[in-house]
Image 1 (cartoon, rainbow, N blue to C red):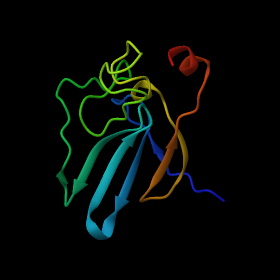
Image 2 (image 1 turned 90 degrees about the vertical axis):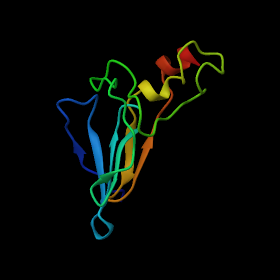
Image 3 (image 1 turned 120 degrees about the vertical axis):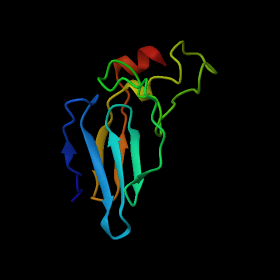
Image 4 (image 1 turned 60 degrees about the horizontal axis):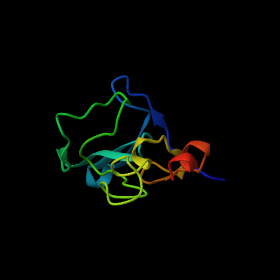
Length: 116
């Protein structure tokens, strides 16, 4: 049986997010399902990731900063006109995980096939 981490709602964010925690080491990570984007990584309540103040977290565009997924290309180095590909502006599925890890997946669809 697979475990599915709890999805948290963020009224100001682009999608639900997963909060991963390692309480014994005071470490946590926040990952949006929109773009499978890691937007926070804290150790001892000290944020380790940079996030742009220009980030729009309403789902209208990609998140700026953190740890993004660039697929199937980086920047404009590929056949797509969309910078960094389409994966960072797609909603990913939560496949399995726990309070300290998660596996996200992006399936092909008519929309992704039309882009790539």
